[in-house]
Image 1: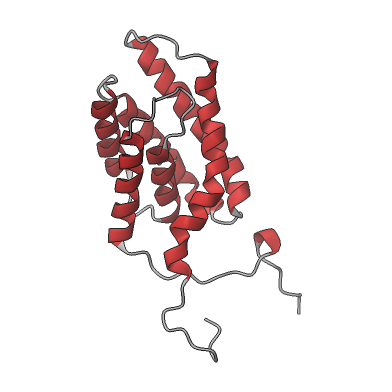
Image 2: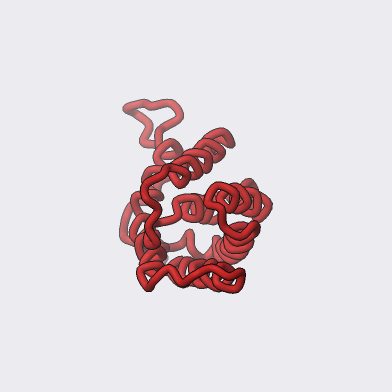
Length: 178
């Protein structure tokens, strides 16, 4: 009989509780409100809506799909005064590819997931830049391309925070490890 293989990352696998739909909605709303804060919008500021959207696309693709991405993108477009549909298109494309990769991504620990998502995040930024410049916008500078790297760096803490409510034991008991 072959020896049992350790899960990716060498850590013990943890059974997760089902996610509550209100928690998904609350996390997306919180990301949207944080993005709406007037923090002196700089070009390299990470897009928390895109990152939270990708997280739920990977972990709950049946609950958070491309329609949610499109609506959130329109909300960001209206708030930022950008071309209507610019973020909607970028978020929808990002969601499509995140959903198509979700089975493979879940085999890896969060740090490796971030490395797998980095090309998608870079493509999203390039798409935002292309649509913005096509519509007559100006080039925001090369620091604009720092955003996907910051988003990839935020993937690990965001994963830990958004999965925390699912890690708790349903009925904590000293005699039962689950």
